[in-house]
Length: 296
Length: 296
Image 1 (cartoon, rainbow over the protein chains, first blue to last red):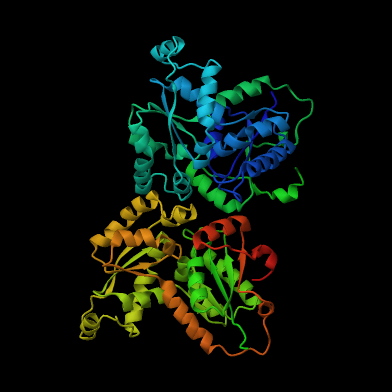
Image 2 (tube, rainbow over the protein chains, first blue to last red):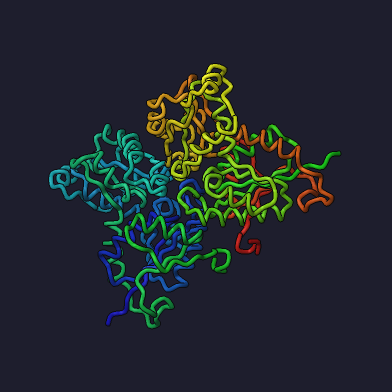
């Protein structure tokens, strides 16, 4: 029997569960250690140094538990802390933004990409940069005519509108993802994207796939929704295939388990909100206190 | 010099600060110990037993710190846990609902009272009951013609519309109290009250005074907004006047301080959100772990 790989992933809270769900569906043999930093949620308004420190604490912990690769399932952390984490830790680290940008470039039919995200992610301009970089690295649209236009020198493909949606995360966390409130606020936030004539919209926050029904209803069939998690899973598959078999079984490699959760806040609330969102029970949740891990 | 009284107060989070602000403005000599149970916020969807247990833990702690009276600055706790707390503890306990109902009856000009609150408070029907009880106890409107009509047998005074506003607390906690989002959602929630032709609206959640500008803008000058905190301060003044002087100085009676904060979650977030809402700095915040107090 092939040894099961162990990966670590983290988010400020329940948002990363949308990424975890996709990984579990498509890579069912992977063991996942999920950290929800619920005592320090939201990350959206924190400073760069703080976000790097949080990412380092959590990554150290995940590695100490046997993680062979880390998925940063939080756009704010990905936008701000990813380079520092990659520099410090010697294992593959997958973020949301490069993957989301790549998938958006492949998906767009007319080259007009939109973004919805937290204010912090919008302000970081990380998606705009990542879209340009993806094109520079040779990622091209699947749409033949747009690909041809780009290759013949047309430069119009890009992120044409980035919209901060500060109330979307609170709406999801309040259990109101499919409510009238969500529809009213979606209209407010998504209107400017429609006005900007986008044809593909990046869901630039891992909470947003929980709102996909309301968002799709607003845009209708002509706008494609791009969930970075889709590309993250492909990248993870690629990373796992390249991992060398380790001599020693990591600590988390023993026993019979699939997902193990650690949260920094009260487990109870995470279990309740997470299970409601995932529509399945969440078990094996432990509380962790970063100050007590002694890792840094 | 007259000894300063020490009172305790609590809320699930920052909402109770609106009550604290009024107490400090009108009773500046009172020392306040404020507990924000931020690790267990929100209270809105919790069960009765749990809410009673939380209230007992916090009240025990407040009394151990020298509180001579307790202000329950949370409508959900007031609606559900107040009778149990009064039965268990031998000091005066002031809640939001009796006081808010009394003030609403006094305020209404045409007898048509509306309520905005969390879903839990609306479901409890506590305000509806309290309005009836206030009238039964002889509380009467200040408006002369309505008072006369009631005294001559007219029975129409009452709570005619109760509206749950589940997104108002998340909006305040996200720092969006004066945003476009708040206006859009206010329209959604407050429209039915206007349609029900109310003339006075109880702000049935201590977070809502932070939204008063948006709410007042929606209703215009013909609808009175009733903040229970106004009546709670009067009740507290009355309670303090009736307190016997204690022989011994309580532990919290020493030293030179006005407000002391305890939170069960991360102090940092409470300080940040609270100071933004209060528009003044919050200092002297300590973290408390109920499990470690050993009180029960």
